[in-house]
Amino acid sequence: MPLVTTTEMFKKAYDGGYAVGAFNVNNMEIVQGITEAAQEEKAPLILQVSKGARAYANHTYLVKLVEAAVIECPDIPIALHLDHGPDFETCKSCIDGGFTSVMIDASSNEVYSTTLNLPSMESTQIIKSLKTAFPGYPVDLLNDTACYSYAEKVYGNIKEKNFAFLNFGRGIGATLFTEGSMLGTASGSSTQFGHYSIDPHGPECICGNHGCLEVMISEQALKNRIPEFGQIPSLSALSEITFSDLGKAATFRDPTALAMVKEMAWELSIALSNLISTVNPSLIVLGGKIPALGEYFLNEVREDLKKTGFRRMADNVTVRYSQLQSDSFLNGAMKYFFDIHYSFTDQDPTNFFIG
Image 1 (cartoon, rainbow, N blue to C red):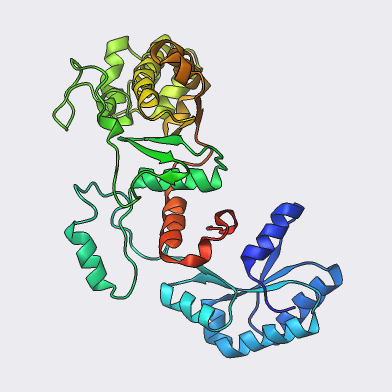
Image 2: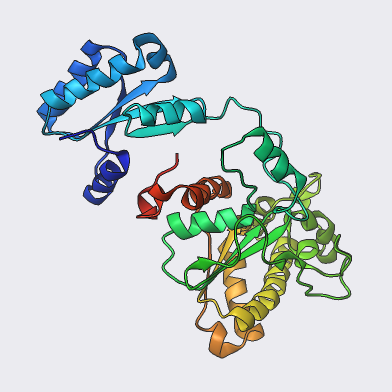
């Protein structure tokens, strides 16, 4: 059989519940030894080539060695993979030159910022500058909450067509999906859920209003809110308080922490009840760093919704924590970017893997 893609290979591996070995090669003897062993075991195989191996053994020679292995071992699936490609040009060169899988590793590049608070991502000068710097390449600035929600939809196995994803960190963001599609695009925020006011007499927000969710239950609000409920000795020496810090204190039954978590759940339920009445999602996912508050917070939110929400709608809504890590917006950004700019990911999004 000809060289196969890792997409095809991984799908069979997931369905069959087995792993696929990947081995770096740079000469004939290594290619022979690995493929003959795989042939004996009747096992699929990934032959990996690094940037250094391409420089040492020459791209063409390596490809021809692997093609010879395919001829000699026709009964096993073999993929030819670029391991830790340093840049887009190298990856493209490998694909054009016969590789069936590539990986780009940009970890050596400098990252100036992973989050940019921009008033209008579509029209900002930074987009124009990037497009000028990289002519011929697609360029996007993507909203972190939108990308996180996209990752949740694809990799979190969400079946519901109408759902809301809320991202909690130093700020609070939300993305809505209706009939399976994101409301708006990931290039800009279509909602300002963090600036929903739950207390018009509450603390002033940077937006000019009072009592917005971001100044009530985001991470940056925690330190200032503790005195409302008392003192938490285990957290008193910290300059900043995280959801994880507060969640641990609540787990150890600190009365002030429990009271604060309970109040935050009540405040969030007020906002969620209005969200439910407005867009009627069947699922609400709480993501970002807020899952660190634990099951006590989540259960309180669910119970409070029975009091604050329109029962006929609220009773049909599932509220749960995200199943992904808080940095999964990076995977979502890459998946979204490839989906809108390259057609090869459109056919089956669950079989496109980013590691």
